[in-house]
Image 1 (spheres, one colour):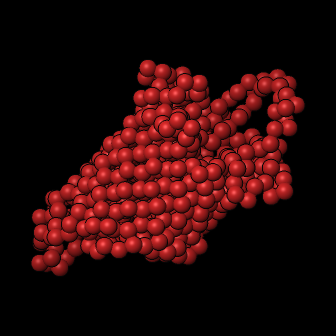
Image 2 (cartoon, rainbow, N blue to C red):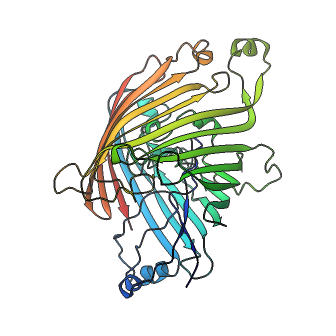
Length: 456
């Protein structure tokens, strides 16, 4: 066999969420390598290959289904079934001291055309999800929530939703295209801070730039491209992702009606892996823009008096996030892992941060900021446990607080969690949060939670 083989490897999937940012796909041209008999007979990871969303255990609770899961995975079809349940309560302060129990169910699947022996570089991703139960975000009085899971696919919506049905095709080792229905909950991705509340932090303020709540819907129908670009900082390539989508899609509808693309959503992200002092990290820059009509906030008093609404066509959000390991346990391959959000964390400790900025004339959140510390395996013999702690801050537009005297000029909070890997398929996460609500007359809220995650 001669020549180069196109080996497209998904790194994180197009997911462009709330911050409207896209995780990246890396497609590399590799020299063909003779496959040994051991490699050919090695079982396939049961939950690997999914382009985005929660990380699935390679040893799920229901096992290999008498060999069916491995047989399907070897032929390009993988499945992941995941349930997250959170018991959470406001133990002091907030709007009301109360406890609630809620969670969600995910069923994800991916078809890999290359692994199926059909053609190189093709992927088809599908997800169905459903929320259930109740969440204490209203009792805490926090914006936008103290539990990310309770926001998706929509708050207080317990219907089954198809949040992803997306085809991706790489045409060269540096260019790929995608089209279909995709979610944005993993946008502004970060190896140490992402996880959509199912892993990592529960508070969405740490998981994405909160400004994009206004501009970026959860589900989009659209198209996009991924360009693998040179990296000025190391030999590992950078990536440029672009999206053009319809922002009017209701998660419960197909979105393919007469108003399709009457309004547009655009997103751009440049993701740059870095390795200062031999330690992996990533720098990420993004911009998203929604062309819909947004109510202007700089003349609310006049609008109230005249009863004539004033609006602007379009609003955008700039976002930046980074993660950087500061210590890594010896013996790990830092050339292969530690850069992308969809990978398991390295054993070690790292810092992360994110900043979002938007126009306060149309977006009620001008600034959002988070800075934190996270890691994995810091306790001897607990190699798969993870932890994180982070404060966050948000600045409310002065155009809003000047007329709404009941609101604070800003909000802030702090979260700390420790995730215990009881088994490969069972994770228990105690979580503590302290949040300052946006309403002036509401006391700071202190919440405790226990999250249970099971991979089936």
